[in-house]
Image (cartoon, rainbow, N blue to C red):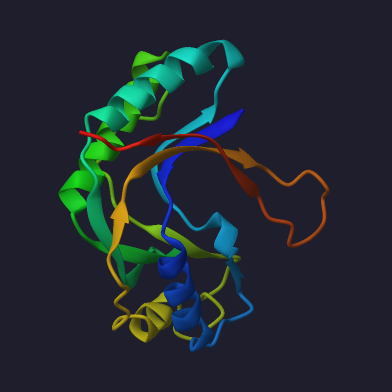
Length: 189
């Protein structure tokens, strides 16, 4: 199974972001993510063999039990080069980073081969560039400027989710990954 640990935005946060994006001229050079795919990835694990799942679940449950609930809000936007456009986060970012470190450590200790650890950058991917300048004439920076004033309502993060990424298999142009939460643990630290 292709898995990652994540924090999912509240329904209200999704609605607010949808409304903010409705005012943005979306260029055809970008592949926009579906709302169902909006999440803050904490630790990407890739393909995880089934025999590792019980230990992974136990370790993620422990990570959640050691983390207190915290507050986030969606905030502004940014981009990684000309490759991806994202919405940012504000609020208890230290708590979000700590949860990301704990999820990464849980996966490593369960035997999941992880990429080299690097500092966590909280982001919710909005679109990926198909090539060119981002389809907006000014590159992704134009979208960042359009969303610069976006401030979402704070929501309480109280769950660590393990999400399965089902990659497209139909070969249909524009087909996107589907995400399903396979397990979730309350933050109770």
